[in-house]
Image 1 (cartoon, rainbow, N blue to C red):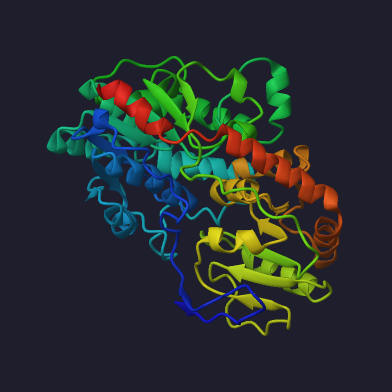
Image 2: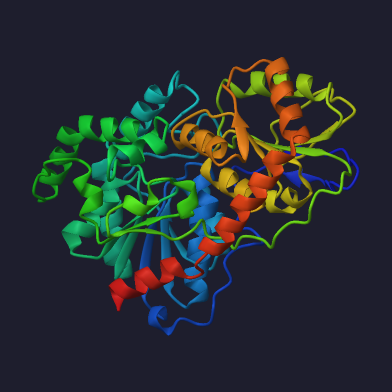
Length: 438
């Protein structure tokens, strides 16, 4: 579908085609020289199309390709074009259930059916992680053998892929597009991570232990005493975020490494000179029933605020837009963040981290999983506010006015962006993979 944007001020909005997820962005990690340690090494990268995770994962794939690794991406058919654009080879899942989130009919997960964070976790457990785990193990076994893979990097929602690497005796790396999802260290760390993501993840994996061990038995693997062992026994775990984003980063196990989100943080943004105020609204690329009401409430809130509003991602369709509102299909968010005064997001990891990296105050309206933790983390850092998904137009307007008017949020966001620049380690993931295939 094509959305024609309305030109407003210096937003420089143009006609765009809506896609399910951004391709690797202009601020992708540039390779710091040709890392000969990876030249010719065969990497199997197993990826589930969950929307926002794809773009981040492919930034890492692109970096590996730049370092002359031979990467094969194994994923859903909806990922093919984006994966091949990085220079990687591509294989579709053949045994696992078909999943194509570009249409409601093809979406296997249908996360929009969730009525609560706990229900969302149950859907992910049954429809993605453990329901098709045996078929996933078969797919990854076939792919690893056909490509003569030397290492398997697997999305953390795909334990079947990790089982395949284990039975083949290959080094296996868990790839996490969120904060580390398991409890660590002292209880104080978990208090700091205030949010449902960690307890929900541990609860759903605990309930899945019998199903997990059934699959392991089918493939000749010994049973586990705890489902989390499927992750903790992996050779490495790469968490694709900055340590600042996860308050428990200093207490994770030794094999867990924070490798950043795959892009270089931009240089420090110029101070606000009091010009036009701009609110950028980037909602979900995954369809769910609550989003249309939220969009209507945001449009109503925008009418009473002296600022320009812009929606990206094709979420505003055939609307009679207020005069200070424009909309477009997909645009790389990095193009618009430097001009933005506030970012409104559902708290998905990729958008959330980009907002922090660009030093933009955030209004987070969480819908599922780690978004609740991200919302509270923004507030703890002083860089944002958060509201419930069913917030009224009046409540949205009040929070937006606060973020636009109170300079303390801009200063805190600027400070957080500086921390992320200092934490940036280019090539961290490549070095970890090189150590294992050495």
